[in-house]
Image (cartoon, rainbow, N blue to C red; front, side, top):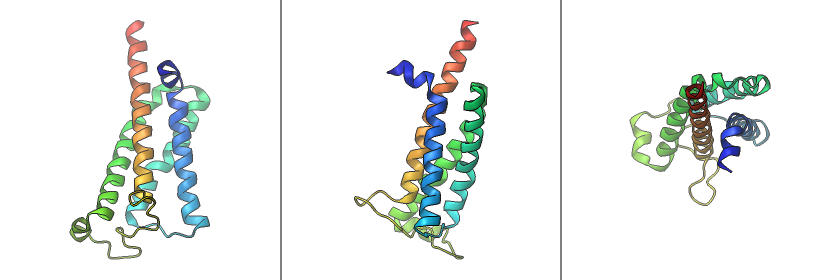
Length: 145
């Protein structure tokens, strides 16, 4: 099992990013949920991951993954802040969204804790972990040579 995750970490990261983008587009284009300012920032970090990870998978180029790790971490930090802003009302008062959709609004709230930023956070965490696993595999392979 562990070998399989290491071997396919790049492909799994691409699949997670693809699912996240599909979910994002579903919520905005099908359900007609208007994205807030923080959602747009999360999209800025998630959407390129689909293209770049897809290219890396197609070429079987694992060397690109360490460069994508910062994008995933930054996107995850934005998603974490956004989620905390939704769940802790005092944070919404620090940097309030003054234009458009309020960032502390919750279009969905499944089981009392699953919101759209939570879903983005989970995706960014999975991608970050998978890219880190891929980076470790690269370093181990470089040490063997």
